[in-house]
Structure formats: C-alpha cells, structure tokens
Image 1 (tube, one colour):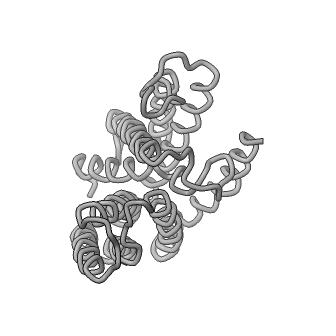
Image 2 (image 1 turned 180 degrees about the horizontal axis):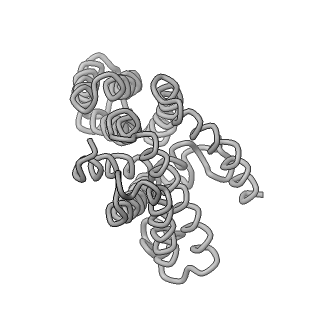
Image 3 (image 1 turned 90 degrees about the vertical axis):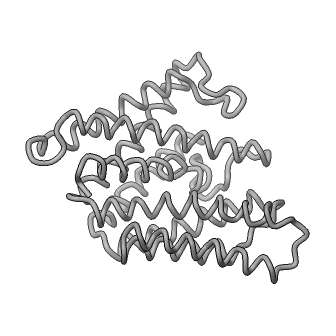
Amino acid sequence: MNLLSRIVVAVVALPIVLGLVYLGGWWLFGIAAVAAAIALHEYTTMMRRFRPILLAGYLGVLAMLLGALLGGVEWLLGGFLLAIALTFVLHLVAETRQPPTVAIGATLVGVALIGFGIAHLILIREAVERGRLALFAVLLADFAANTLAFFVGRLLGRHKLAPTMSPGKTWEGFVAGTAAAVAVAFFAFYEDRGSYLPIWQALLLGAVVALAGALGDLFESALKREVGIKDTGRLLGGHGGVLDRIDSLLWAGPAAFFTLLALGYG
C-alpha cells in the first residue's frame, strides 16, 4: 500500500509540477510558495521543542522567493538578511524560554534550507540561459535518482551508506541513483549539445544533482533522527511530507544553479 501511494502521488504530481515549470513566472512562484509554506510548517512542527519563530520563518522564506523571482540572486540574499532581522526582532518580543542561539538558530536553519533551496529552482528557470529546459532536467534527474536509489536499495542494497544516520540508504542505491541522474541529464541535453550543454557538461550537471541531492536527503535524515521521527508528515502518502519529498531538491537546486553559472550559462 505504501508503494502504491508513492506511485499514485508521483503520477499525479509530476505532470502538474512540470506544467507550472513550463509556464514559469508567477505560476512557478505560486507552486513554489505553496510547497515552501507546507515544508516550513513541517519543519517547524518537527523542531517545535527548539521554539522556532514561526512568523519570521514564513515572512523570510516569502521574501526570499519574491527576491529570486523579481531581482535574482542579489534580492534573494536581501530576503535572507531580512529573515535574520525579523527573527531577531520577533524573538525579542516573543514569550519563549529558549535562549536566542537556540530559537533563532532553529528558525534560520529552516529558512535557509527551504528558502535558498526552492528559490534557486526559481533562479534556474528565470535567470539561467534556456532555464525551462535546465529546470526540467534538474527536476527529472532528481526524481530519477530518488526513484532508482529507492528501488535498487530495497532490492539489491547490502552496504549501508550512512548506517547511523539513515539505515535505509545503501551504496548500491546511491550508485544506481547517480547513474539515473546522469542518464537523464545526458538525454535531456543531447539534442542541444552543439549549442547549449555539451555532453561532458550535461554529465557533470547530472552528477552534481545526484551528489547534492543525496547530501540533502542525509541532512534531513539527520534532523529527523535528532528529534526522533521517521517522516515530517503524511500529506503525500508513502512519500511522507512535502519536506520528505523535496529534501534532495533543496540541495540539488542551488548546486545545479551555481554549476550552470560556473559553466557560463547565467
């Protein structure tokens, strides 16, 4: 039943997401804002014992997404600086017994993780040459990596990738997921290899997405282990919560964006 719910969610959600990516602009911002709000809710619920400053988190992430859409990287950073200021000011007036380093730190980790992660997906679409194609490739490469890693890990996995942090992840799954991400990037850019990403750059981008995505997955696993939970929510059935579904993208998005910039496509 858990596997069936995973398949159903993927079949329904993936075309919707890709359709809004195709439209871009405020359409993409809309789904990004909804995903960010739900993910931040799941994060603050998960970290509630540290008393994160909720209003500062929501306003900060919103400012970062708007900054990415309207002004690029500079405004995105401005949104994060606003989040820092808001978190400090609202902590001053909040009635919490947590020390500032704990409450402010817990808030800003969530803001940085979700805000930067999702905002860089917007930046890929809006600020990178052929951004629509690039974001399609990043999303599909990440999806393929997660899917292959899951199935190969369950069927063939014998060697634990991070046994104390995430016992379910295996090296076999990671290798299969990386191969899947590289293959998706190869085929996504193959037709345009003479005018956009040559083959070696496409392969590099796929590998970057796979590696960064695996780190993002492990990072969220570390947070969940810290608070003793398995999933951040139940909204997406077998996938868990929204944060569980996008944890790899929150690292893969920024990594892919700066890889594309380094290759000269910004």
